[in-house]
Image (cartoon, rainbow, N blue to C red):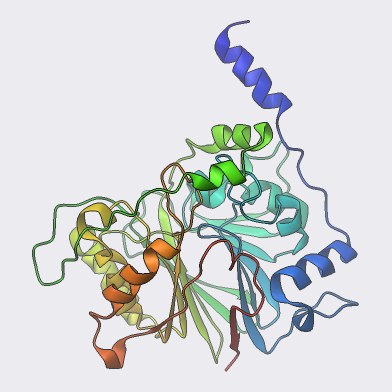
Length: 354
């Protein structure tokens, strides 16, 4: 047996079994852990319809309850370089029984668990045609729906409007993955940001072979295009994106589309990206200025791959300094999430529905 066959065989033996369909008791327990005991009916598992509840489970992945409808934004429990850094499992996320999973893009750190979660929970996946193909390929016999919102060849700024549930409208917008561009010497430019990686967490949370194998199987997953999502009720608007691209350089037309959307009550946006090494947090700021949120929540800024990444605290002061460049009357409040304290932390991101 040659080396590649040997590695393939080892990876197969270390494949984590797909989670089973959750029981009602498991759903109640998972929802109470993610959203808080007071928000979840202890008999039915129904989540409070008068609140917006946002629970972070690492990188850019969030469990949301909007008016009682539960859904996921991205679907990856960070692991591979560590194990247990984020205190949940794929099975527990599936036990939330989300109605839908929204994929921002197809890289492993965003979509690597979407197939098993959808298979176990019955969630409908939303993403580009390429995202759907990637997610279906994660399970042996896919038995879940995947709604295709364009493809990797769609034009920047293309938008897709649909309904998630009665009273919840969704708009998806094709935008741009983070990318390094030339130094912006204009007044819009920002100073480079180079946080020092923190491999320290590998020692405290060493990776298991199964988690390392899962990372190895998914690490080359294609981007498949990038989507931003806005969720609206008649009383609340939530916008989320798991990458912040150089729109000013590559697709300024997307900023016009974002400006045309209703202003966001809460904007959950990626701050870590390839352009931070050249242009700091200029790109995330461009999204904030276009989306006009009352509250901004940074994401994709924790120690999800500690050989390359830092803890969220490294971004706190840079985010605040970048937002200080926005005129005070238009500047959102920042709700900073810090790993590991704010993983699965009910009440940290809780808002009245109207």
